Image 1 (cartoon, rainbow, N blue to C red):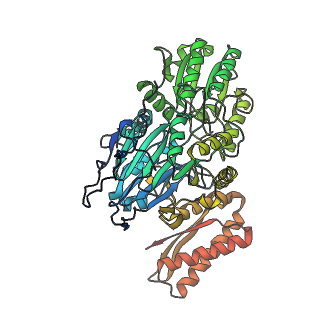
Image 2 (tube, rainbow, N blue to C red):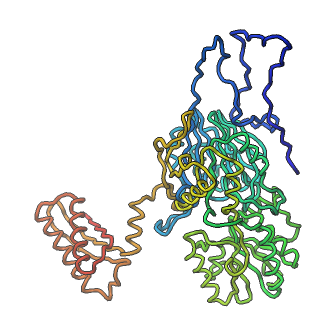
Image 3 (cartoon, rainbow, N blue to C red):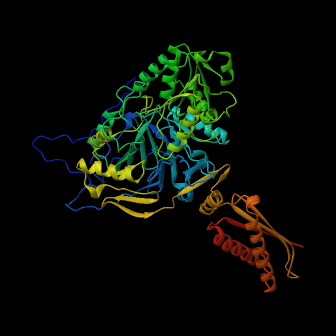
Length: 623
């Protein structure tokens, strides 16, 4: 249903008086006022303003003298994630005494973050200025845009605004963290405008790989900022709702101060294919696999993709089972809120799959990125308690590997081939299209918005630079393009825009239930343990008497196989004994100092013999 949108309100013009001069205004005539915005209040399109339209400010002119008006508050823009990285998207806008936040996502650990589960932004600056925060505004429901909110809202319970599906997915996350009851969640619809302090935030429809993705038009005292969120131009979207290029073009004509535009696919020329292309490929796969059970792995939040899988299954008389916690949560939320059309009886519980012939089943699962312990990973390595893969199965990876995940994906693909499983993936069959804009769509966004300033976001450094170059090719002044980094502040006032200072920013690591208790030193130790192993030296010492009472015993883990290196272990024991005795004879009576002496002696000896640096852990007991 097409949404109604009224034209901008025209400025009132004084009526002309025939054959007479214009009446003079009283010196102290009251100025026109508008109602003050109320934090968190939503207004409809009837109340929309005209962006950067010029208007008279200050008192009326009198006797040709200029009356100075107070300067507008400076606008500050800084990202706490999503720059020089993929994921962890979070951008703050600060003006006067007000701060709003766009998105609050998670990142995924790289190979150096051993044992780490998730990466979230550093919230220190926001927490220190929490009294200014008017709300968090969500562009869509993907993990890299909403995944950090449970950790954010634990200590900062501020209003959160998003569309129904976005908040439906978020509610599951907050419920798991026992935060849902007190959360201040506010549903908005495409086209709504929310007042938050001195900001007005309008939600504008864009296409993406999840329903109800939005760009945001943020009206500030300095002008209008457009944040695209994640988008692409899909002229044949699954839900029939195309990106609102009319409204984006209208904003461009009215005047946009700055554009923040995603950069994920800036390296790809042309246009991003339509999601419906995947439906055509799925139909061909189902037609050619009439004797096989079909297992399809995709992103849990790709509701449109899951809908097409269900549609194809219905067409071919198959039941559909969902596995993987995040997949179950998202599908349940989408069905409950009416974003997926699933006839009754099509979805079955994963526990019921043995009741049906294999060729009458489709299983939709998580694990398309090869994540260890995901449902597909456990299937591939025969660790799934419900699904065992055989040569009668066809596995479809309906995704492309996120940069850095290629080895993980390759690992499970190899394992499935080893088991005789047929595997289709994007390089062989068109079973995935991106949800992000390629070069021609990015050019369209720039042409529609025509911003004065531009800040590329949502990408690694090479993406940001290539997006900068794309904007320059379209005629934008390089001086007006800001390639930023997390924590770097862009300041805008009536004199222009510039970098000015930084705020605390970085990565906070989540390991199990621990938040931020794993840092660089712990990661360094884990890396050393994984590469060089551990040597433990245990001894009983009487510091008062200066005597080695028992030991030392040398224990090796992950360094060498002790039974095959008894000579090295014996020599290490002698070095340790000698170091302890000499230290006690020299009068060392501090436990910390004695441990350091033992550690240094063993470390030097082991490096001399093996050129390796295992972690040395002395354990001393006192009698």
